[in-house]
Length: 375
Image (cartoon, rainbow, N blue to C red):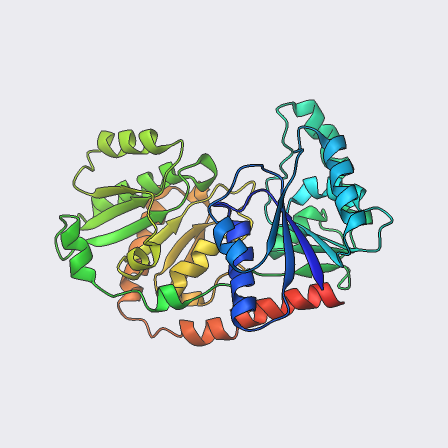
C-alpha cells in the first residue's frame, strides 16, 4: 500500500518522531512500507536524513496554511499524478483542507487526531469560531476513517457522538521500551553528579515548560513536599516560555538547595530510572492528547502523579499512579506524592509483561497501522 503522510515537519514533533519510529521498525523487520512524507513546513527537519536513508521520499509543500486555496490545489495535483492508495493526515482540524484536495479521488482518506486543543492557526477568534465547526464536519463526512490516539481525543473530536467501529478507531503510538528497560540504575551517581546527598528523593518534571504542562504547579507541590521531607529535590528538565517564571518561583520559595534545573536533555530514560516520582500536573482543559511521557515513566519503574488533564490510556500498572484534581491543592498532591515514593521502594514491578500485552508494543502498533491501510 502506497501511503502519503501529511505532517508539519520532520523535526522535533511527537507525531513525526512516532512515525519515524514506526518506519524504522517496519524497515528493520522487512515489512511492506511504501511511504511518502508531505511536509507543510519548508525547512529541513532534523529527522529528514534518517528518513531519506531508509529510502523514503520527502516532499515539501510550496504553500502552507496561510495560503489554503493554493495548498489544496498543490496537493490535489500531486494526488492526481501519483498512485497513492492512502492519504494519512496528522493535522486534526486542518485535515479538512487535505480531504477537500482528495475529493472524488480513488484514495482512502484517514485523519489522525493527536491533540485536544482543537487548534486553528489564526489569531482571529471570529475565524476560529467559524472554521472549527466547518472543518470538524468536513472531517466527519469526507474521511473514510477517523483515528484518535486516546479515548478522550477521539470522543472530543466526535463531540461524544456514537462510535462507529468501522469508521472510528483508536490507535496508540508504538513505543520502543529498550531505552527505558536498559537505562543504568545509578541512583547514587546521579545524585552525586548534581551535588545532592545520597538520601535525596527526586521529584522529576520533564517536558515543555509551557502553561498547558503546568510546571508552576509542580513547583508548588515541591514546596509542600519539602515542608514535610527536606530530602525531596525537584529535577526540572525541559525548555519553554515559563523557564524564568519557574526559576523565580523556586528561588522566591527559598528552594535553592531543593531543585536542579537541567534545561533540555536527551537522557530522559536515565533520569527516570534514577528518580523517585514523576509529576505531570497538566491543565484539565484542554486535556493532554495521550501523555506518552506517563508510559515512559512507568517503563522506567517510576511512579507517576498526574492531573485529571491527562488521559488514563497509557497507565500500565494501577498501583503506580495517582490521578488528582488540581483543585484539591498542592498540599494534598504532596502527601499523595510522598506516599507513591514509599510504594516504589516496596513494589513488585510487572511492567515488562504488561507492556508486551498492550497496544503500545511496537509489533502490535505496527500491525494495527497496517490494518488501517488494508481495510
